[in-house]
Length: 600
Image 1 (tube, rainbow, N blue to C red):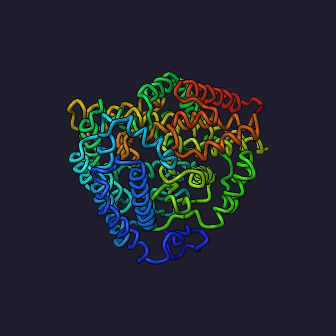
Image 2: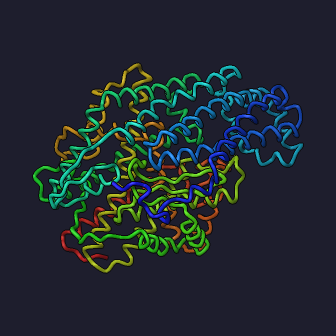
C-alpha cells in the first residue's frame, strides 16, 4: 500500500487552498463559536421588525458557513489518513462546535414559528431583501408541527454530539481498524485485500481469486458482527426515537419529509422494482449458464461475462474520455470541468489509511473536491464521471445560489452524477468497434442497473424493515439482521443463486445505512437521470441547456419540483417504469448477442 507522501502532488486535491495555516482554521472555529454566543441578542426579538429578522437570518448563515468550511477541511484531512490522531481530534472538535452552536441557535426556529404566519409574511413583504428566504421560511412553516419548544430544541441540539456516535464508531472500525488480510492473485502473488481493490478482485476471471477475496472480506465482518449489530441497532433506534419526539408517524416519514417526498414515492419504487425481479432472475440465470457453473455463487456476480483483454486506463486517459463523453452537455460544462481538474479538485489514488470508496465534498466557499481510489480500470472512469457530476452540480449551484440554498438534497444530487454515467456509457457503446467489447459494455450497462437500481432498492427495503422492526419493539440482533438480509438477497437474486454462508453479513459493511433512508435516492436518481440523458441525446442543446439550468437550482425548491426544470416528474412511477423497460430491453439484446445475433 502506497504511503501518502509517496504520491505526486498533481494527483492530490488542493486542500491547502482552503486554509493557508492551522491558525486560520482555528480562527474560523473560534469566530463561529463567538458569533453564536452573541446570537442570544435576537432572543425574543426575531419578529420585532423586518430588519431584525433579516440580520438574524444572515448572521445564522454566516455562522454555519464559517463552521462548514472548518468542518469540511478537518474531515477531508482525516479522510486522507484515518490513522492520524490530529485530524481525528480536529474533526471531533468540529462536532463539538456543531453541538454548541446548534444549542445556541436552537431558539430560532421555535420562536419564529411561534409568531403568527400572517405577521411573518408581512415582514417578508416589508423588506425586499428578505424575499430570498421565502422558500426557507415556507419550509419551516410546513414542518411547524414537528418543531419542539425552545427548551426541547436546545436539548436535542446538545444531544447531537452523541447521537452520531454509532455512525462514527462504524466509520473508524470500517476504515481504520478492520483488516481483510492477504490473498493470492491469479499469478500466485500475495496481495493485501482492501476496500479499494475488493471489487477488482471480484471482477477477476480466476474463480479461486474471487472466492478468496469474498471469504476474506466477509470473514472479517463476521468476526465483528456483534459489535457492528450493536452500532446499527442503536443508530436505527436513534432514528426512531428522534422521529417520535418530533411527532412523525415513523422514522421513514421523518427522513422523507425533509425533501417533501411522500412515502408513496418510496413504496412505488419498491413495488415497481419487485415487479421486474423476474427479469433480473432471467439475467442471473443467463450469468450462471455463461460462466458454466453448476452453482452460481455471490462471488460470481461481479465478474464480467465477456472475456476481453484487460486494459489499463491511466488517469489522464480517463479525463480525456470524460471530456468526449460529456461533450453533449455543452462547451461551457466542459470548460468548467477542465478548470476544476487543473486547479486540484481531485484526490486520485489510494494510500495507507485513506477513506475507501469515492465521494464529492466541499464547503460553499471551497472547491467541490473529489476523493477517489483510482486503480486504472474502466470502472474507475465511471467513478470519475459520477463524482464529477456531483462536483459540477456544486460548482453551478454555488455560483448561482446564496448559501441558504447552496447545497443539494440527495434526491437531486444523484441525478447529476448518473446523467454523466449514462452519457459515458452511450459514448463508449457508440464508438466501440470490437463486437466483444460492445458485449462487455452492454453487460456492464446491465450491471449498472443491477447495482444502482435493484441493489439500492433492496437496501431501501432492508432499511424500511429494520426501522419498522424497531418501531414494533424488536431488538436488531446480529442473527436477526443477518437472517433478514439473507431472505431479501434470496428474493432479489432468485433460485439461480446457491445458498451462501457469507452474504448474510453484507449489511454489516454498508456505510450508507448509518444515514437512514438515503439509498432509495440512488434508484430514483438513476431513473430520473436515464430520462434526462435520453432527452439530451435526442434533443441536443435545448435539453442540455434545461439540464444546466437544473444544476444551478440547488435547494431553492423541493426536489420533485426542481427536477421538473429538467423535464422529469418523479412524483409518478413513470420514470422508474421506463428505466425498468430499458433494463428489460438491455437483457433481451444481451441474450441475443451472446447467442450469436448481430449487434444493432
